[in-house]
Length: 186
Image 1 (cartoon, rainbow, N blue to C red):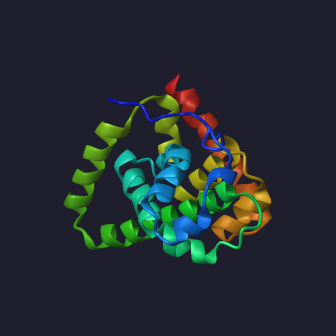
Image 2 (image 1 turned 90 degrees about the vertical axis):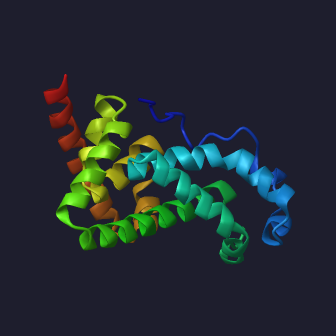
């Protein structure tokens, strides 16, 4: 079983200034490739942690890059491009999870159980990752964004569409649950 990469997605080997946003908006393949080289690994790490599925994460990052020229129409070039890209990727991941949840509701219980078992066999890399997977998505998302990606509670609230207080409460609950789960696994 392969472990998911753990480097911080907030680190970037090259500054955002090297990106020609006008060329990306126009769909220039070289400009898109530059953005991909600079940010794809970080995005994949972020989404892998949020979804607990490497395959889903790859699909989501692919979707983000396919739609990037169109999505840039909404980018106002205030703040860091990387921060905007993280917010965009997070929103796409959340939409993907909501869509997957709706599809699972339509599946029979047998089909859902089979999918879950197969994914678990592939995804379990270590105790911490396994414990993180058991959290409810709302708790996992806040934990990943705050602890692993160092976003402020205000940024998390804005990205997830919740209050700052809700973000703080969810972080507290996720930490409590993870401590309890990891005690049992040790």
